[in-house]
Length: 450
Image (cartoon, rainbow, N blue to C red):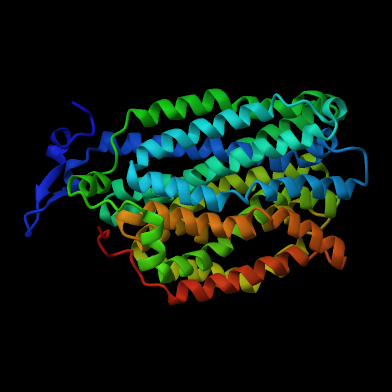
């Protein structure tokens, strides 16, 4: 008998007033929830470790994969590849959302981590421009597209998985594990980049040092996949399949019946998309290339900021459970509108302590959005289209505004000659998110819809 058959899940089910079977929250043990949290953390961690390695080693990757040219142009080319890899994410959101809503969250997540790990490992094996010429950046682009496709199912799926397993009064805290794992992946990527740039000379870093973090994705991904295959799917999804209510085309149902929450979700994600990549991925490059800060010091500043960010983000999840998703998300937008430009202005400082404090403050402001957004998005859609709704809205906003953020920030500085241009861009994203969240419903105290 399959481990996912109705008989094996009968102990988790109980009758409602209508006679239908529904999962009892108390039927989910602490051990099961702990395994779910661990599996969700590891999978998302692997994904963002890769993105961190690419972002933090962008200046080295630019030298390895592009012909000798103007340094700024090579850097723009590297970030352009980063941005192009996001173009497949809306398509990936549709496909992974369909799979997650049709065959289950667990199955979709098990495949997404496998594809991501394989593509990341292959990046670490690629020869550079000196060996393959223009074939090198083309192969890099191909692998980045595969990574973008697989990543489009990870964040949304892990968030839906945790929300559907969480106790009703702790959905915000559980879902905050996903952005916490994202920050942990960025943190390890930052530590690796700092260690590599500090211990290796420029030539060794270009020859082989940059490959190490990409090659590590294979063993980490296999561990994450193994853990996920040992889990049961969520009670909410099992209930849906037992009642035979899963829709055959979740994306079509999403656009037909849930277009308003979908539009609001895209707007709400905008601050997260731009803020995340500007503050946590692009910032080391901004500090070293634009502000002239020593590259090792810029990595150290980002690393310390990420450490505090992880602690803040779990606290934010708890705050959203207590005070509601909308209040916390709107507070994040208001803070970014008021303080982003002054904060970036202070980054042009001779004091490393000031730069470090500004990064910590920006990270803390971002956690108000990042720590709340996963539960907010998951609660906006019913179980039948939850994975699709989350994946499509999140990946659409990130494809248009998130993956392009480092490129746009670099381009805006080059075109305007104003080092504060990225701050104004981030401020505009915050204003749009504020409007979208204000128009959405508060869902933190409601039961998950079927």
